Image (cartoon, rainbow, N blue to C red; front, side, top):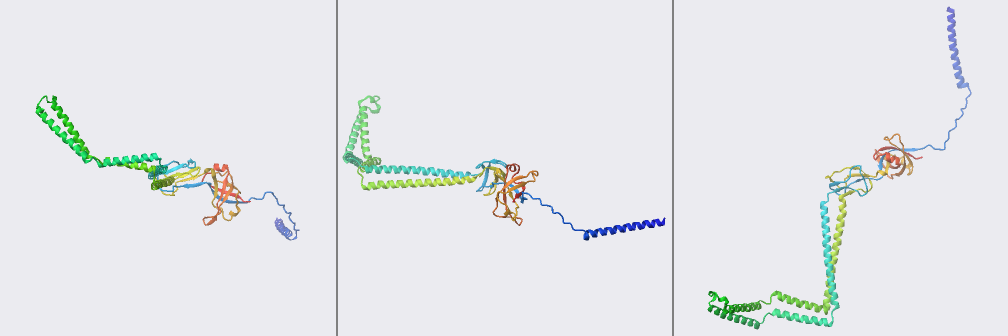
Length: 417
């Protein structure tokens, strides 16, 4: 039994050693004795489509046209006509400031125009009158007209002198004598009346003495009135009227046979009247210009939409006092949505050209990829956290315009090769 076990142990050892020797021999053969085989090259797969190269950037959705809107002047907001999200047309009124004081200034300017126009009309009428007078002077008159005018002047002078002179001494004496005679007749009638019983006689009114007394009284009063009237004339108004008649007659004669001085005077009146008309006309133009300036300034009290678009934000309420230039609304044209990149590196910017295709993806619509075209490249770099970046604008297709919203962030891949 012992002998058998020893033989089995040796056998195991011998087998192990033999396997070890064979392994070493095979390793040596493979590394040192076996012939080296040259591997067959694998052929390259060629394709007609070159590999695409892209430039990546982040971007934001924004309208091609958007603008903050503000008043040029400050004031109190009295009306607001739109709300956020409202679609507006160009020139739509958005808000209005209190312009009550300014409207009073406009009303005053309009009143000044009316006053100046009235003055101009009056001055122009004076020009026409002066021109007519000069024409009449130049026209003159016939011999018969001049003779008649001279006769009328002579008669007016005679009448004036007579009125201005008043009653003569003889006329006054005659009137005084009439008064005295009437007074004596009245005394006689009064004495006869008294002898007939006077007022104590109940039948005195039926007597001839009473009738004679009445007639004598009336005659005396008439004579006295005539005498006093003669003493009172001529009055100032009578003299003035007579003088006016003389002056009118002289002017009539002068027009029929004018002197050179009269012609020069008439011409000077035309010049003066025309100068007044020109001055009034200039005042009209100045007043109208002032009104136009005020009306133009009145537009500053109203804020209007500069183009068709949508009100994105409204930062004002009725009654609020606003400062000049303070943004109150943001208006954007949502029909012109595009992508504006925010971090395109300066090393990639030279590779991007207008017209290149772009792919746009958004976390809002992860299953969609939108197509776009590079429409513009900023000529000037901007700073982004210390790096220089260039903004690239990308026009969108209609599907992207329907899905994406103003302010969304997107990822952009621009195919540069």
